[in-house]
Image 1: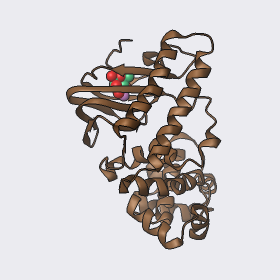
Image 2: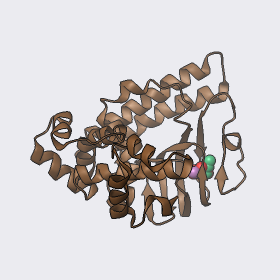
Image 3: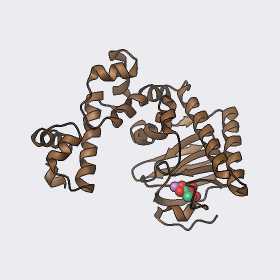
Image 4: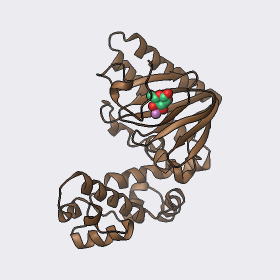
Amino acid sequence: MEISIKNHLTHSDVFADSAFPLSVLRRTPQAPFPSHTHDFSELVIVYGGKGIHFTDDEEYSVSSGDVFVIQGSRAHGYRQLEDLMLINIIYDDINLPFPKEDLLDLKGYHALFTWEPRLRHEHNFQSRLRLSHRDLAEALKQAELMEKETELKLDGYRFICLALFMQLCGFLSRHYDTSKVPQMKDLSRISGVLSFLEQNTDRFVSISEITEFSAMSESTVLRLFNKTTGFSPIEYHSRLRIQKVCHLLSTTSKTITEIAFDTGYGDSNYLSRQFKKIMGMAPRDYR
Ligand code: RM4
Ligand code: NI
């Protein structure tokens, strides 16, 4: 399918089947593509050539064996390409009927799909997934089955495609988790904790709860967490909660007191003090 070049791609620009938010786009080669955002996410599997993948504030060279996720709202593009070959699996995580609960204990999943993209800048792309020849061939085989299903559209193809995508996500997540690359190993070990903190932005979480959740010793969690994010778990959690406050301030008309309740700060004065510390301004001014 030919895609017109726009800075924001919506579902109808890319999904051939409007009732199914999962599709496989092969780029042989990927053409230079200006900075753009989308309503959906992309799982990129690079299998040949090289080039520069850039975002608003960084650029990385990518080559065969690199696998990474682009979360839709993040602007990105490609330039200086030399026969960059890739398979782009585009999906809309919100509308995919994916049994997410079953993924929660798959540490590599959190790392690959959520935290590597979000910490990519801090990690300078060093914690991206890199596959060996053999594993790349296996991932491609699975992606190709999906590709064929989406082309042929035989009866039940959505069902089968979804199953294949789940299998591929599981395969890649396991590879992420068992990697020997130190940056990937650390991120994988701590990503479950990161997701736990993000799922609990409506309350305060203590360090002993974090330690218990992680099943590591307190000193290991603290060390790994700091190494991976640059912050202590409590500080990072405050930042996640303040991010949520920002979101509520800009997307709802809730009062500061209500927002303080929703994010575990309890009262508006305490919230305002914490907000000022991180954002450098009062919640009202932010709004
Ligand atoms: C482009 C490139 C982009 C993707 C679009 C759909 O060729 O791969 O990242 O968003 O296709
Ligand atoms: Ni894109």
